[in-house]
Image (cartoon, rainbow, N blue to C red; front, side, top):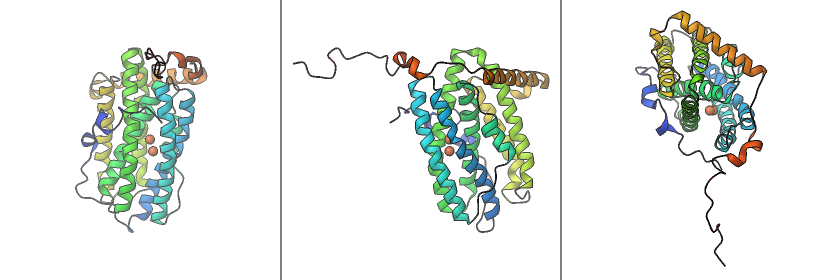
Length: 292
Ligand SMILES: [Fe+2]
Ligand SMILES: [Fe+2]
């Protein structure tokens, strides 16, 4: 259906090997870790249900390629919902509510424009999900669970790749977007750090895998920064930026986000499709019919 070639693992701006964290042989083991894994899978279940937002972005897609991508992505995210329900079944556990910060990052922080969506939800948000998927694949002993996650990873890599490429394209066309997207990315990174601080209430800190959480968090933030640099959103190391500048960027990004949320704009594809690159292309001089 969709013309989505050109997005996937090979095109990721930050490769799987660069996203990988070495847990040094630490493992989630079953049945010992059933409850902890059920809490983790419940957070992902919520994240997959937010795939309904693909409908929002399908309606607001700037071009046919994006519309086709979101149509396909919605199918994939709904399939992931079913997969996490089955993983919880495998654990013999019921789904739990999502943490408020997971809800904030996935729903309340929803982009107010197409570049905000591709940068914050797809490149950064789904990039964060991808890192945790890789980490679970490397640490869960259960082969059946790992196979389900590996299958989902192929699709999540495409979602992240689309987010990265479309964000990089938006920045190349409109460099003035960079400070806003950077400001909102700083807010998202701060929220991820807050979430990590609260995780020990739900998962045992002394667990062999969880003991790596502080170092894994730093790796996650470093990967996010690398991705922001490669997309052209960030032009200098975050460590060299003063907190006043970061606060200013976060305020500016949040202000622009609020303005766009209150006054959404933009034409729909039903107004613009005739000038879309997929429609506006050379026509074969004799059409597709043989000359009579
Ligand atoms: Fe997903
Ligand atoms: Fe996804």
